[in-house]
Image 1 (cartoon, rainbow, N blue to C red):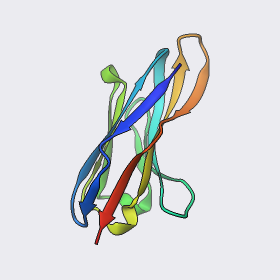
Image 2: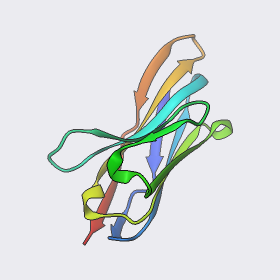
Image 3: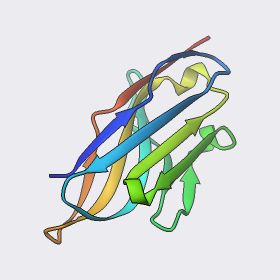
Image 4: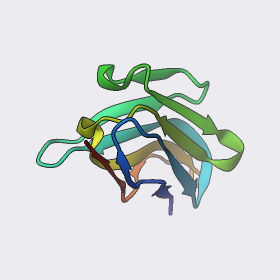
Length: 120
């Protein structure tokens, strides 16, 4: 069973930085795209950044120039470096991955999330 586990969320002041990590494990043959989504308080989940298996990236307009997504395929890990954080970046951050499993199935998986809170 594929599992995604996020880490790195914290309480930080505006202007600060955080690095989120997400490790995928369990029955993985290959991981295609991976991404980070966030859910601000009282709002719907939204895409933050996404990275393909060939390291092509795309970002939400609100984070361009401040956030960087990267991945380590050997470790089945995706990272999100967040700089110059703003209070509006507050939310629960979720990892997402499109996975080919060892039983030859394709599925989309989510982690449980990690909380990021930015104080003004």
